[in-house]
Image (cartoon, rainbow, N blue to C red; front, top):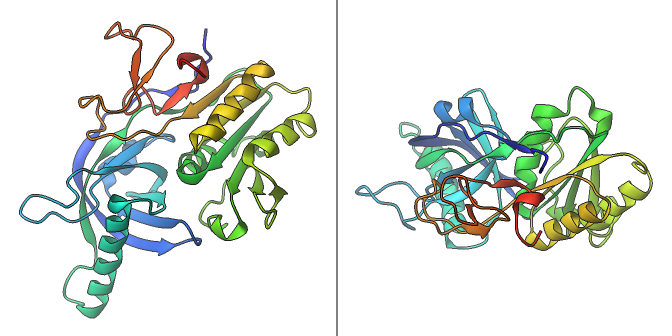
Length: 294
């Protein structure tokens, strides 16, 4: 039976969030802070929101569909998101937030907060894997955000047993230290060796398992590019270690209705009887034993 690494899905709300700050925190990442108390109070590590990329005009925004973004933190009635621009939606989101902040500076009587439609928190989040001596998480790309939240919620009681690998192609692409600070042991990995371990997150994982954490039963968590997560899952299976991953997928609704984000499971779904899972509702966090081909 798969060891649980997933927290129960919490009720979600649809509301309007105010973008209270937006800043570049590396050559790649932007940190966006949103005031939305209803979501901040409910959010759990590994969950995400569906966020409109522009303010409504006549009841609509352009692009029409919101974008799924993982929650990096939730406190003081606000949530934090860490994202990078990869297409029309995130490029529009960046432009919307930056324009609103400049507008507020130039016109003090007008609100400088972009007001964006938001739904969340969505999906099943992380829960610590049971019966392990230590925890190792690999984060790359958009997978950094949910792992930062996970560590902030769980690692403080025994930080020496929690290891977070943050990976990027080069040092300038790593998010600023103060933005992703967590309790626990942080390992940096860059492809070119400009910061921390020279090599991939997966190579860093193998090094830790062969040295510092040798002969320990380790729980593995992976979030980021799918090839990285598949490689981490392969290592977990080879060493008979429990592991979970947080999947990404294109989705239109975020609540299991559109069925755009389905993946194959290994057993019939308890509600539908089909070997299919929605990333938005059944995930995004899955134990690898739940997924076909992992």
